[in-house]
Amino acid sequence: MNLFASKDDLIRWIGELLKEHIVIAPVQVQEQTLFQPISKAEEVVFDFNNTTLSPKGWFLPPTETLFSVQKDDGKVELVPTQVERDAVIFGLHPCDARGIALMDKPFLEEPSDTLYRERRNRTALIGLACRQAQPECFCTSMGSAPDDPSNVDILLTEVEDGYIVQVVTEKGKTLLPKGLAEYKGKVPAPPELKAVPTREVISAMRELFNDPYWEQVADRCLHCNICAYVCPTCYCFDMRDYADKGKVERVRSWESCQSPGFSLTAGGYDPRTTKGERLRQRFYHKLFYFPEQFQDVACVGCGRCVRDCPVNIDIREVISNLQQVTEAKSGS
Amino acid sequence: MDKELIQQIRDKARNLLEEGTVEGVIGYERASDGVTSRPLFVYNPSDTERLIYDETCAHNLVKYLLDKKGKKMAVVVKPCDSRAINLLLNEGQIERDNVFIIGVGCPGMVETNWNHKSETLQAKCRTCQLSKPVVYDFLAGGEIERQAEEETYSDITEEEAKSVATRRGFWLEQFGHCIRCYACRQVCPGCYCPVCFAERLDPLWLGIRIAPEENDMWQTIRSFHLAGRCIGCNECERVCPVGIPLSLLNRKLEKDVKELFAFQAGLDPEEKPPFATFKKEEVMEFEK
Image 1: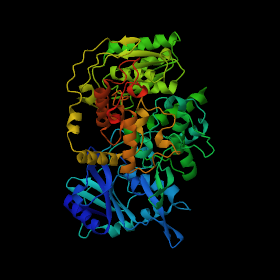
Image 2 (image 1 turned 90 degrees about the horizontal axis):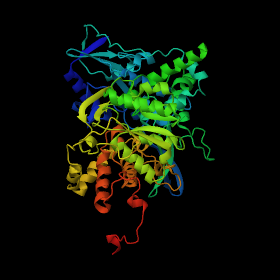
Image 3 (image 1 turned 180 degrees about the vertical axis):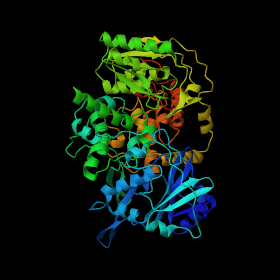
Image 4 (image 1 turned 90 degrees about the vertical axis):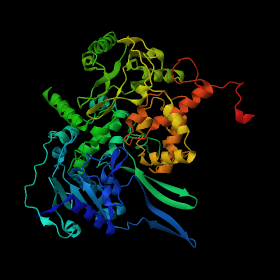
């Protein structure tokens, strides 16, 4: 059943949620929109293009302490970081919700990642359907849609005088405010998106590992980590032990296959030293290794990498080029 | 787009490739959004038709010469970018004989985002007075007279007038946004250490925490490494995905070096940079 909430209802609702939860929502920080914990409902931005960073950072923070070491009476104890409060991510777009569902696969598969699992269990997702698509959006080609409710607990859809509130899960039901009326109007049609044909990409990837194409694209790649850090499904990290002023802890931070040294082994050997090899790794992880292991392509079509790459390495173009290279090969 | 200028670039690129003078040409082509531009590497004469040049061609292509060491390459170079060539020559990173510089005059680059170009000139272009590249082998389109629209260091002087506490607060907040994607380093023609201090494990200069204090350390050391070396292309600020105003740091150091040593990086291919030279008669005040 669909319910209806006016904007004021939503603001009151967020206020209610804040009493018992950490609420993470899109807020304006200088020129960017970012998902951040809010302190009052009025901070929330409702009308936004995809945020600079995806909300994955709530589950896999840019930096977090996994555990600290405590010494007591000669005894050494490892104290894991505790997830202390329930949280709600408010206003995430369906593509970002799918990003979280994809991150679940490696992180929740046994042996699961403790901190990720705890945060995931204690976080509800209130999605916001997209009423407009940006030119870089291609979620419908990547298993989602601007109005896809499948990876959230509640989905909001903006209509003329307020929002349709679609309760998707039991968890969603427990978050609902009291007194919302039933919505009997029409559900607006989602915006149309330009399709990116992904047909045969995985099988193409199987054949193209040694293709000179990768060196060609890598020519202009700068090997920064922007694409990986803005991506809702890139989840590589590094870990290091810190010992500062008697405090010892193990820290985990984002890292990316584009970094020099990412694949450097202890013996000094690096299997991926060239730009082409590093660039290829990211696309192989998304379009081949991940689907081989977890069935889905590790891309949600949010368009962030397309939008933010300083040298316009456009994953849609890469997919299309791979198809062309394969066709040319099979034709010759 | 200046069609005549673009034709000159294409013709020159085609000649260089056909004659075998260079292995490749680094220039610009239209990006996938149909609005902005992106770097293009041309190896086949037929691909020279993809080359373009307009007010969205902000990328400093000189950085790519470091990836192509030992190969003969041509590169399309704007006046500001040309200073990077002198920097790399000064520092022995490239060989002049290996580089064919296709210089272009510059009307100023506009602010761009994916799928969007504005009418506003980039800040660095509002203070630019270079009518042509400081070094080139061929000049496409001729010189374009530039009148600086703004005073070069007015914003720096404003910053300098603020209290240390205010500036510290401002920068800690800015560095709080940093995600350590290292795009600033990767795009910078002056950042070419085989192993960056940020990745060195022994000695360990910098941790992996993406957090204000360590980000602060990263940005501070990086800007000091560029003191007297930054050529002002401002690519670091342009590519920063979180909008940190890095040019304030770089230009503050540029201003200091100019005042102390009467030196600006990349203007002269022969003059040794102040931090790469030592004169016995130099006595710093702290030594008195």
